[in-house]
Length: 326
Image 1 (tube, rainbow, N blue to C red):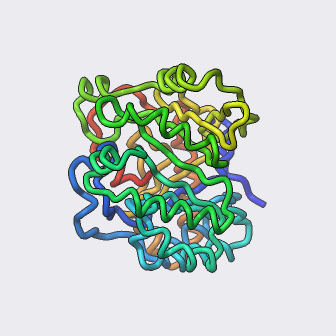
Image 2: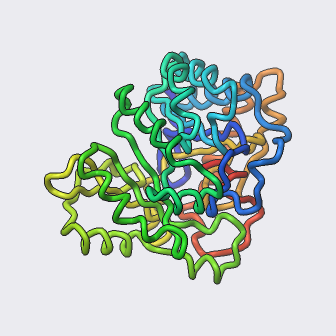
Image 3: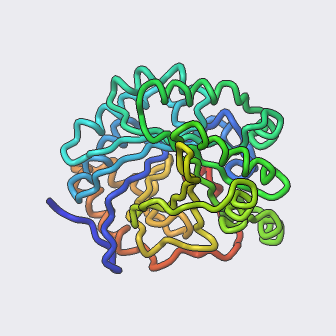
């Protein structure tokens, strides 16, 4: 079995594929320009995705996560999941979703072989949730979460991006979801990936440490949980509670040294790092007579382009989060 290793000795195991830039929400940190409501142009096809997964598997990648935009808006998602599950070497297939369509679509995704689900949940108060998503219905999300629970896909991971003056009042309520349920509620620092003015971003930023202090002031000390060193979240629990509370701190505590990820954007760019703008256009390789070999060669180039640490200082970026893929 081949192994994809970057120039710093990090083994690349995980592939994130954005299959659409479309989204039925307009979250403040992801789609400030309303790009998700536009009809996408030049997105990768189901066949393209299949070829990318096969090429990645040949290089030792074993985990695939489908993202967007909102991946549940793509009618071909189940086919992509099914293909990934049948590729030799792929051991784990997951999606990241806002869960608004999940209750309806989950049965076909389970039949296709879906292993895990991450759900974006930035608030539990309906009014705050509606504001944060610019129109989202939290009841639809809860139905999706409950469907995942019934299906036994554990742990149910709930991701919350915290932004000052938007949803920082929800931190303790989100954490309290782990009291009775075995959820993993994970607080993610707001990254400067949406073309906001640097000063505006800095004024909106809340560190994972600050979120933790708020939780401990309300509920008492958090106890560490055994962590996977390659995972971005550092997990804790409140003794006696059912779930876990995690912090993903790409700004205040970058975890680049353990990065194992590679990304494919919905318009066919291989992106070695979320926090830098180094991309490789895979379109020519996808249209090659031998796309698997051509894509493998591009993955090798992309691995060499992975930087030691991503750029975390606020700068204007040409691509928003929804254009890159979460």
